[in-house]
Image (cartoon, rainbow, N blue to C red; front, side):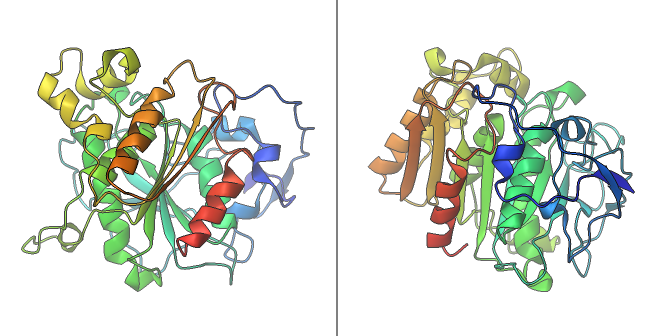
Length: 344
């Protein structure tokens, strides 16, 4: 039994902040807690109000209140709310240890309410400076998407705090898109409507996936590796984009991903504003002009590259508070409307 509120939420962002540095707004009144049964397909986690304290205390799998999760090494025949899926059935590439909390990359399932699923999918990539994976971006985004009918898979990827560096993080992100696409038909989902949404360094990982994809390896013995890693669209929230333009680099993230002395060639390769092509998928980009952690010019350069290459995009660039504001009304309604125009 989880300790969760059963009050349905009409505007998720007004009741909870997924932020490390949120805009200065009046605090929402505390929501009373009740002991309730776990979420079901008819009353999914998407519709359960979760407190910020619960989110902060969530497990690495993005399950709240210390719930113990079974890691499914084989893709299930049917999806269930809050299932935790291993990206690889055995050890992942570059895997160091066997601690499931830090060594095993996973996807956590967030299902829409019964009868509300559109068939579209979003892979959610939280931030955390490539040092940790932030539940305060993963859980709210997963709930927001699922509540609106989009099946969400929240990615737990490997990070530097556990001694992982490039290319482990990129491998995990690319594998997540392939994993969902390969299994989508069996799950009743559309393999041609798979998007990604990334926050901060999760935005860097998302933009890396969106600019470094491939069509798959047809001769691979692993059926997941045979499918394309190209997302059909991507959403970036206050993203880290450049690792090479020194005045704009968020150096902590770069150090966590690449180590203290990366080669200029690797910095260039992973400066994703320089990797946009006409094949980059459509984008929705959100950045705050008040962000003092990741300069807004990261997003400016990325959208300039999208425009130059005639990639469709929407860019919300306005004062929204400091870095890490998470899922808020300032952009989420417009993003969902955009997703609907893309048939998500």
